[in-house]
Image (cartoon, rainbow, N blue to C red; front, side, top):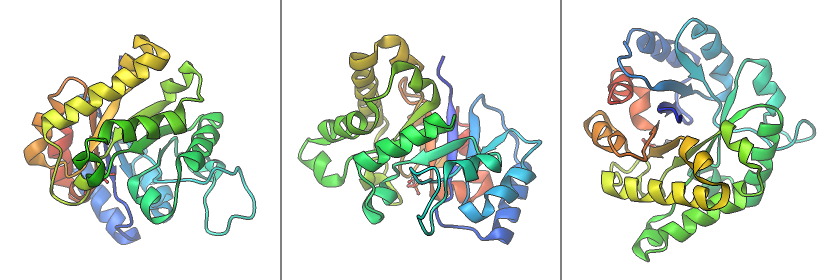
Length: 249
Ligand code: 13P
């Protein structure tokens, strides 16, 4: 059975002191839902976050990693570095990585391979831009992103993959996909998986929605049958808002 997951992507926010404060505030919240909770602080704060949350029901995940195992890649972080501090899940393919750091389907396929080879779970992000949706190309774009980066994998690899549909036009804009738009796309994604790998795989993969999820809209979005959770940006930086979203399940 697929799981419900709410993951907070902190992006490039919060220094060490702010990370400590937000973690303490998160620890003061109570969880009333069955959702798995994750937070993704910046690299410099992962170790601290991991240590602080050892006893808590919150997984600490990374926002990115390189595809090479090690070597001359100045400024990059490898899978073994992340694993050595206890990180077991990495976000890959966020639209900000694609847009500002030139990540392509090809490099993402390599990152996915490296992660899975090292038993690192992947939250794989993708989503169309506004122009794609306006030209009614959104399904083709999303299908291409999934196929190009993931469809070389064997079916059992999907035990360690979570998908995150994040329409670029809804990220940080305050404009969210309607629950119906999210459901339509999530059902399409699941069908795309089913066509390639069969229903058992398709039904077992969690598909998260990301893009301006807030306490006010989470319940309706999470209420849709193919939406298994959320990848939360701005609202994850406030402990009360984040737990209101976690508890929207
Ligand atoms: P916002 O929730 O701020 O729109 O960001 C979504 C996102 O990019 C999560 O990865």
